[in-house]
Amino acid sequence: MHLRFDEEDEAFRREVARWLEEQLSGEFASVRGRGGPGDEHALLEERRAWEKRLGEAGWTCLGWPVECGGRGFSLARQTLFYEEYARAGGPGRLGHIGEGLLGPTVIAFGTEEQKERFLPPIARGEELWCQGYSEPNAGSDLANVQTRAELDGNQWVLHGQKVWTSWAQWSDWCFVLCRTDPESQRHAGLSYLLVPMNQAGIEIRPIVQITGTSEFSEVFFDGARTDERNVVGAPGQGWKVAMGTLAFERGASTLGQQHNFQNELQHIIEIAKANGASRDPVLRQRLADAWIGLEIMRYNALRMLSREDGTELSPEAMITKIYWATWHRELGKLAMDVLGDEAEILEGAPYELSSLQRMYLFTRSETIYAGSNQIQRNIISERALGLPREPRPQ
Image 1 (tube, rainbow, N blue to C red):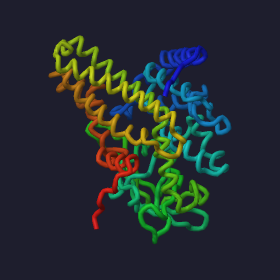
Image 2 (cartoon, rainbow, N blue to C red; image 1 turned 90 degrees about the vertical axis):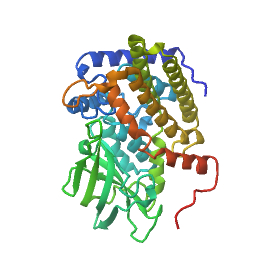
Image 3 (cartoon, rainbow, N blue to C red; image 1 turned 180 degrees about the horizontal axis):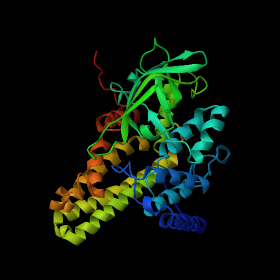
Image 4 (cartoon, rainbow, N blue to C red; image 1 turned 180 degrees about the vertical axis):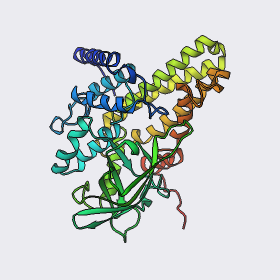
């Protein structure tokens, strides 16, 4: 893909940069650079207010169609916004799951009634969402979902457990993949339900990570209810809808993620120059390799985004997760090696980590969540290359 920015695009870039600088140097200065991986609990109320400010100013849902409450921006304009957001130190987005995953899914598969109910609060930054996919025995093997729901009058009643549910304790709604046909197996008989989180039938147990924070939680459904109209797609078609959601996960915001990676790499380079680590030829080569890897990541993302049809993964998309997760994990190791002995020292008691220490610890999880590296290799081999399926246990 050849991404070119014309004069109007560059004027748009300057508009975005000015707005972000004004906001993040004024009322929202405290959230600048906060809320990223390992820092999820930081300034929650301030970041909720930030979500609403983005919505008021029209800086949410940039790629959504205008008729659905978005801006209808081109890939180029979305790229510019996400890059400037990362460059300005925009805080970690609390609304990402609703804006980037649930919203596009409802646009693609939902009813008009669902669009009218759920899209506007996301665009305004008023309702936060979490994702109810993984279970203790259905992580990478998502088709093994056991959480069940059955109709009781005009409501679905849910029983079961989800795990690794990011932002569950702060979310207003959860999209839940569950089994609505008790006689079904594997991909069949699943449904995609939209479930309110603030009700008596839901228990949330945060899981403390090695960063000391609790980004994700266990979620237990014991008679939780949602309206029968809150099923996206027809009952039993949940697998198709769920795979559509996973395709949307690899949207234009991935370019902003990569700019955050660039910020981290630049920080590591500055430390290497300051403490003399840059004079070590091995570390110099690793820094150069990290820069090259990031450039490859960016161009593959642009190539992927130029070919996506929205609900199906292209071969380019199938390699992105394993590539960036492995690259970022190695960047964490590089950061600790550049810091040297300083990497062993906490910033404060009892467990106050530096930004690079948080990054290093958090990257341990990135080659596991959203499909481990081993599962990603299976996806590439079977779906992209057409190789025989891995033998399954009998």
